[in-house]
Amino acid sequence: MHRSVLLVLAALLAAAPALAQDAARGRETYLRHCVQCHGIDAEGHGPTAAVLTLQPADLTRLSLSNGGIFPTERVVMRIDGREPLVSHGSPMPIYGDFFEGRDCAMKAPSGRPILTSEPVVDLVAWLESIQD
Image (cartoon, rainbow, N blue to C red; front, side, top):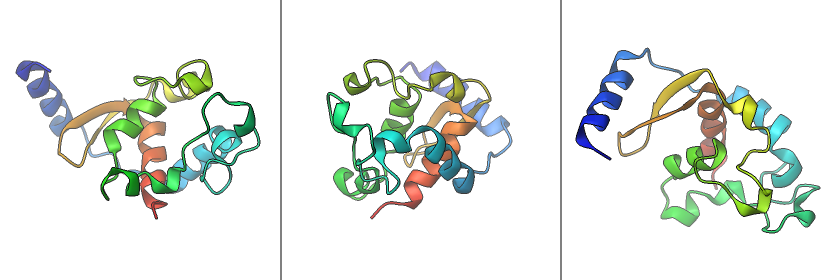
């Protein structure tokens, strides 16, 4: 990414009021939009998992499979559709409109700003809280 774009993003993140991540609201979002594939326990055993081309990930082991560090950027990009998955036949989630709008920025563990939406910020907070 160009340095000027990073500087603008950093300035926007610094100027924006801090958005508190709401893991409880993230859990509600998960139960409403993700449980069918990933299951109530988030281990990838939802009722529709059997019909997907690729089996859903065990969302409780994201940090474990990433050297003990929660992969914030990758998770955000999977949820908001910047990194689509073929198992869904379309960008994830299939409820994409819900995750659009209400733009905000959050920081990756590296300190790098990530622009996404408020529901994604909350969902990521909940996912990070359930890591084994």
